[in-house]
Structures are given as structure tokens and as C-alpha cells.
Length: 119
Image (cartoon, rainbow, N blue to C red; front, side, top):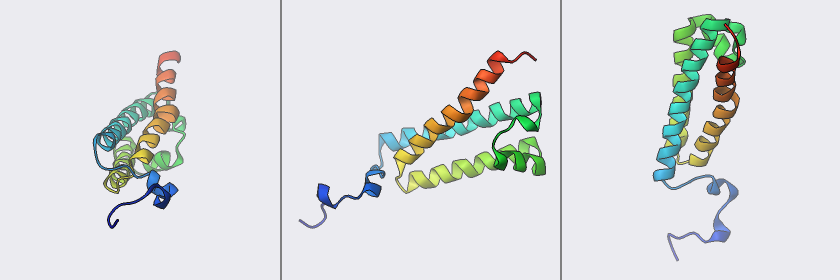
């Protein structure tokens, strides 16, 4: 049986690797959209409340060094590039889980902050 893998031959790591297809394409598309949305919300949040509102030390350092636009663009481009690398390596489940993580720890908190805090 050359060329085929049995269930016993698959490792836990190989279960994280999905074949290229719809799931992987949707996962990377959602990841890119989430990164863009986080960048926009972070930009608005930093302009509204100042740099101290940003909880990610990598983002706040990049913004402190390069400015809001350039710093955010650089960090988001790096994130998207790493997500694309995972996609090209067919590690789509991790890309999907990172999207869910970003929605939970970035998109929802920013959204709640904008909806509840009076300016």
C-alpha cells in the first residue's frame, strides 16, 4: 500500500494539518479580515484614548517607535504574513483558531469599549 496512510500512522501534529481546500481558504480569509478589523479598531482606539489603551506590548512598542499608522501597519502585515505562511504550510486549523482568539481578545473588547465608553 504505497502512498497511503493508515489511521495508525497519523500523528497528533498531522491532524492539525488540513488538506488545501475550502476550509483553509475560508480560515485564511477570515484571519486576514480579523487582522484588518483589529488594525482599524486599534487605530481608532489609540487615537481616541491614547497609546496606553493598547494591551499588546509588541503593537504598542511598534506604535511608539514608528507612529500609529506605520507601527500598526507593520505589525498587522507581519501577522498576516505569518498567517499566510501557516496557510501555505496547510496548517489551517491553527489559522482558524488564531482568528477565533483574535475575535475573543481583540475585536470583542474593542467593540465593547467603543459601544460602552462615553467620549
